[in-house]
Image (cartoon, rainbow, N blue to C red):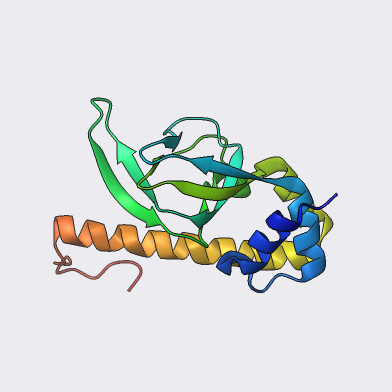
Length: 163
């Protein structure tokens, strides 16, 4: 049975804007709504990558943390965005830490169930993975800008193989 509130959350979420309603109805069956208070850890580096989240409200800080608990924020995840994409690309471990910056409401998907749904529904799977690739591209661009800020923008004086 489809939870109508979850279905409405899916319909209103930017991440799913190009997904057919029939697929949203199936997605509503395999996800659950979760809530986290401010300053809660959703997952930590090196933890098992099992759950994929789509944020409905609130903000989440994604950081890389050192063993002595010093963390460097690498991204902020906003409502309508994807968090915890590792299970979607075959990673069994997480490579960053996610902590809520404010109270958060999200939809949580079991990564294996979501990948099975993608495989069983190729048109959905293509669109879903296209959206996931967009998220990864944006996060990589953000990380690149942070690296340029830290290291400078000076390029080597010699020609690179990629030139």
